[in-house]
Image 1 (cartoon, rainbow, N blue to C red):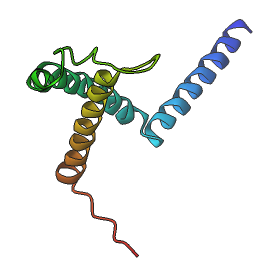
Image 2: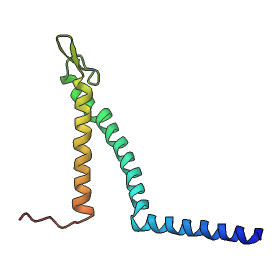
Image 3: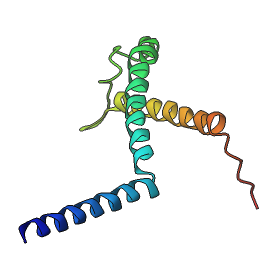
Image 4: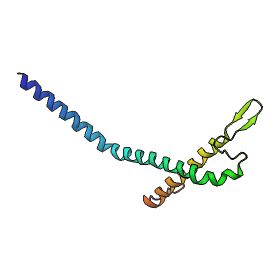
Length: 114
């Protein structure tokens, strides 16, 4: 009797694994996970380009030279515009790279306006 129960549990487990595998394939979870990981690496790369290449060029034009800690004082309020500037530059570069990938690598057809 014990052997029969084990076989039943094994086949149920195999069935669950088969269903899970079908789920991963049907909803393309694996390529999505790979794209997510590559995207995170691209973000790190773009942040490095901004912090180590672009911002040192802009630093002489920023009063005090410390672009990341640059603040604007409005009465009792301090606005950290240096960090905001870096985030905006990062976003624009990442958006542009995604646009280039979509345009040239994927060669998607343009959506026509109606």
